[in-house]
Image 1 (cartoon, helix red, strand yellow):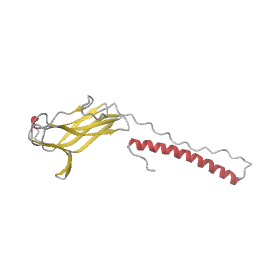
Image 2 (cartoon, helix red, strand yellow):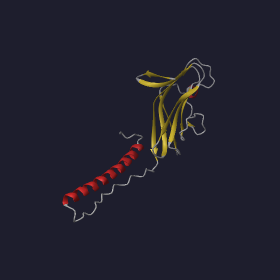
Image 3 (cartoon, helix red, strand yellow):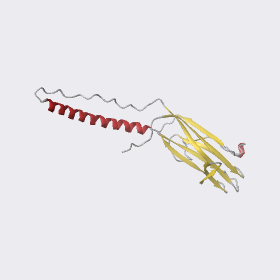
Length: 194
């Protein structure tokens, strides 16, 4: 397996002169429940025999291409009329029950004794449709409550006490805002900058 540049595109390539069953996978994590996932990838092949390509999705996020939970597209190759020119393969499924899914790109020859088998992949994309379940929004900040001033305290001291009380409440609100920002960034799978 290697990468090559062809026609101005970078391709991930599986090339072997012997029968093989190989591929690539990528596990994707989601911040909230997923209703549907769709995979599209541009594929191309060259073969002297029976090389076939297909794509799959494991809705549980497993990484075993032989796992029972992987749902595969049909095979495409010369035996079913595909000459091998660049073509976008698509596959989709709904009802994911986990917070992750895995996409698979697979190249296999069966038992054909051939000299040349080259499977190429590029531009893999996933499209995600989330369920209506949104994460709980953070509570809105409450306005600060300042203590009642003591009439016997000099004005300058009262102003200082109010400023200290307000500063303390602002620090508390800043802590809550930091938590809320962290939750929003988690939705987009980003880490806060420190």
